Length: 448
Image (tube, rainbow, N blue to C red; front, side, top):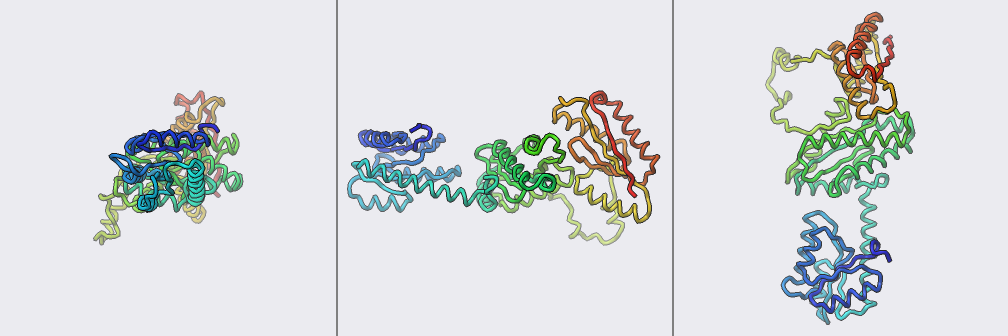
């Protein structure tokens, strides 16, 4: 049997003869064996990250006996949140009280010395088979069937414990525009995207981070001991880049859906209540969704915020002071897709009812060659977005659509005026260093 696939058994006994006998029996039956002569040696070995399939632990040893060793090993496993290694105690003779205490503590079986080879091997196999069955059932019950991440119930239980016992960062991750995948490509394609993204999450985070799927396209993660806000934003940027690349592989090069992720996060301290932290991270997620998506917002406590519902404001003048615009930027308003859609619908109703005029313009940045990298195209598109915002009026609204597109709504403009606006944008673009590498294409349509 290959040593990499053989069951790994650790035998702990202070008697060298017993170690040799047990090692010889188990090796002949295709098992990998490590022999240790004390309980402390076992604890040191386990704390270095070694994870055997089973431990054979002698009860009567000098210094630290088997029972104390067992309890200390279990405490360590619990403290670092790792699965328990199954244990069979080794007892000598007819010591019934030791056998009873072994099982009472939680050992799965006991074996008497001197060893009967067939009995020893059979009992080990019984425990290993039982453990595997339990693990399989546990994994099935706690795992999301599609993504193989922790399901909602299981990850919530893990995160209650993690938030209470560890410092770290709680992330709520929601895929942007995922519904369009199902609508345009079908649910089978949507499932492929979800599976691909779950793989990205597993590879993007560390092995001891907790990741789960809590809804259709919503995920949650806890990153232990992470407290740097800038790192969290780079994490979100990496997820967006990798998801876009995976979507191209799954859906084809002509995929135009602005697929990505929005991340709401909160830095937590030991003793944090998970449900409260989740609400705050979710609030930050909502902020990302309402401000362009494809990014990360880290929650900041709002102790200084004024709760208007509880204030004693009674006259209109005071409300005016609170609600009036202050330090308004002299630029067009960039909105996320949801907010843009709401404002757009309202303005269209107003324009049609009062017979005003308006134009929609779609700007597309087109590279002169195909060698440009996605990250560079993204940066240039953002730069063009700044030109748009500065060139348009502060009463105009705009939305970043696909990776290289902006949709603009120009209210109260005539056909002549819209061409003047477009020419002004193009003149500003000609002044940039990117003019020789990128073309700006546009489509204009009147709102009638």
